[in-house]
Image (cartoon, rainbow over all chains, first blue to last red; front, side, top):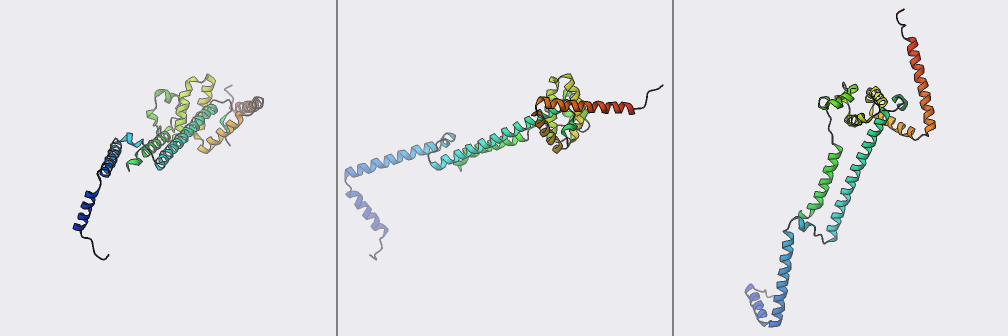
Length: 109
Length: 137
């Protein structure tokens, strides 16, 4: 147990193990490796395609980010519209006061 | 970092829009107004450049509406404009609130108030005419 494994010894053990693997097992291992490489290539291609890639959100965390961005965008848009509505109303009232039959003093404290 | 790109972009656009909306129409110098705007806003020409930005915006909008007003409305507009521009923002705010509240009063009640004001105005005019120096014999 106290004997330390030397690199040369490890290499020898691994080489021997490989030679002892049966051909059907080797074939399945090769197939699995090829499938893993294919998946990796596809993911790399998707990642390199810029904007399009960013639409592919497949984790709940990422979906939340889009939801939060959309919610903030809607809130900003809503507040902007409310502001303009308020300004528009104020200007309409200003014109109405300026053209009203009653003098301004009636409406001023 | 790359994954924050799109949401960040959306938020950036939203904030830019908001800033643009709120700060649109910067302070306009009197000399930059069109001749038509200057004609309508002549009663406030002297103080135009010192008026608050929001009031300028409101008056520019009013100037746009001016051509569509009836002749008597134009006359009232001209008569009141200077006084209106001299009010404080708080007074204008209160005046708008009172005007809107008064607009909700039934027509018959509003007419009574208007009649009362007309009578007061007539009395004032009469008093002013009575106290004016008499014309040459």
